[in-house]
Length: 634
Image 1: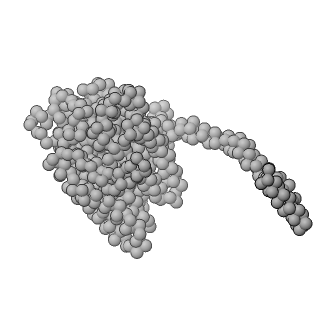
Image 2: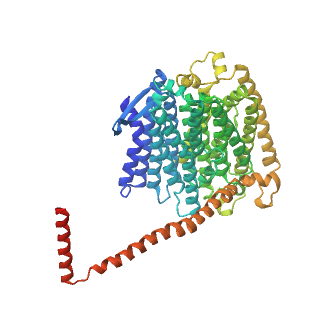
Image 3: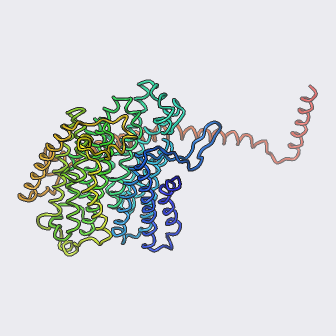
């Protein structure tokens, strides 16, 4: 099994290396085959690891090699494999493989085809390192690796300066979170002398962790929250994610819907023993998640770019996951991570199919009537929309209702706010569906003639993800219902060996009430969207400046980017200009110039002793000998 674990981790890196070394001689088909093969091999190995964990729950620590050895300090490059790791391995590699297949058709005409696939494989490798790591240090390698790959993929079409700006924005905002991660690592190492998960949270160091002062525990947990907030796009570090839609659509599906943005969720769950000791920080996580979910859902109500709607939907769904984490519903959060990967990857790839058919058009105001031209894309997109809206029996119904039931059990105010997020999600997602696929076509004549269904390489992944969005929820039947009907093999019981100590569950009555009540309300929200955008054929306003009041505020994304630009970016620029004019020019430059002037002045005086006259040199030599003799004698 150790060999299988290593192959699962390193297969994508091997194929990345092969493509990078031989890209000049590889055809597009060969590069695509190698890239897809690496992820598929990793997926097969991940399934073997999952099966091994399913049959017998255990924690395996696999040493790859000794990484750092200095004096008494040593750090091994080790992987920690348990049931939580197995879940992430399967859905990262499985969804990643389907996105790779879709990318072959979507990116075929692109000049950087081989470079694109090498980046994708490198990203998969770093994501696997992140979730398989046995220590904060190894996790940080994967953490920074996915950030680097994200930067490269967002700026993939680098000739457009907007893409480069979006990549820099993502890079800088993630670095803020990384500072928190590094601080938490330093605090843990200084106080406990270890960074290994297997020791800190499962082994001999756990009692020591529990003995740390509440203030220090809160500081460590708070630093980890900062890292998670940056990577998972939570308030206030969420604005990078919508701009990251500048990347090719498969990248949006892989990195910004299914994998990288869930790294923060994974970090909090992996360190759940720490958060169980810091209830105030856990409540902070719940508040941040709820606020982010509400803000993302509200902004999504009036977006007109098909990918931006999905981007703010991702921000909102990540907020719901954070809310669940803060309330102690770790299994519900992880379950929603998995189902969200299915239907959000489906929706992003579906939007890519629409953009492909519309010759690059992303504005839903210029679409409409596409269900006749894109039947497979429409049906799969509809399934994804139903799933994310929480309609039974699709995947989102089970996972989202588990979060809401946990919220109702823990604190009703979070349930009410979470329900509001769910109703807005159903509304804006069906608004997107109706404006894109229903009504009359609103594009140009050239686009009308170009519209066609995507090739099988793009539609087959859509169909498979649609199937997963339909059946994926059944693996996570709610805890109360599962026990009531005698089901003992569910997602909840699967993760119990890892999270059972810190997990909270809703009662059977709460689960049933939430399922019935929320479904009725969500159906009402969908019907309202149908009345507005199908029956009344309401269309988004083309000029945002013409809007007033709350509509303009929402359409302008609450002007948060403008606030950051004015009060943070521009203030930083002005401060930098002040430092340049005062510190750089008047202090540093003058100091350096003064040293140079002094050296030049002293040198000009010293060089006068170099006369070029032999008698002078002989005299100096004789005087030197006399002085040395005098020193030796006296």
